[in-house]
Image (cartoon, rainbow, N blue to C red; front, side, top):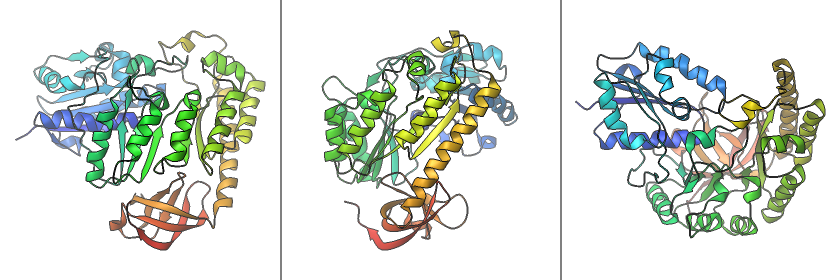
Length: 437
């Protein structure tokens, strides 16, 4: 019988894509997928290292998974946390047999064999040439898919661990990306999201991100094209023009700002000011009418004053975000920010986060209430987690619950937004399923 592998994934969409890649690597080596750790010979936890609580959660989960371990079985940590801690994780968590970083997935079968034989092992070497082009990811078939176009990051934001866990930035060849998207479209995927740490800085030596958008957006069967996460000042006029002139590109951008204070942005080593960030938003709004924005915001960065936090609050109102992901600063050992002094007390950071969340929610609620009654094209993605409704998404990234059968996944409908909880909408279909272009 084929050995069975179970992979549990934490963190960003890049990790989700890497899990699909690992299933491809191990499937080629003869492994079968297990959906239950109790049925697995190999258990891998694909980890995030962006915040400390994510790492602590993984360490706790190791203890839970240990009870499912079979004689000769393997329990491994892979991904960003594995890369950050390296072989030290084997000492820190004795129950772990295997530690593998994102550039070593090609060697998983061999490494698992060593671990199964009793040789606890780690491979966290960087391989800046590695794109896994010859390894088809194993995805759940569906109307949407994520495609990695860039690995690593060269922007050394002082708070961010990613350059130390993902290595130097490198982009896949445009032709290879297009070939992968064509294969997805042939299987019925009609919405693709391009993934990269600073995705709009994509360049393969001959083609930039504008070229990539135009090429992927012209693939037969691709009706919608998204990307994440861009860097604010990498939106060149060429990229904005490509977004505007490529019909598949959706009218939504996730545009991380991190702070509304120039002083904090300088300490973060972000390469823009508040004014420049807002200028980029205006350029995108002028080029793509109706565009919506979400963002990331950190509070409690070292030495952040009350006045600097108030600048962040005022930015939420001025930028008029449609949604925001908000976080308290988390110290990451190995980053430059870990050496900064004047850390904000935890209770102060928590109070600021509460105020920020309240401001964001109020703004989102106001904007979404105003959208009730509008008619949008909705792609039906999957059954909702509760009830008998289906969950869909507009081009501008609003989630909509529709009364449709489970077989409607992958269909496009014109739907009127009938109500909102403040974040998610209810909708009513006003036109039948629309054919995929």
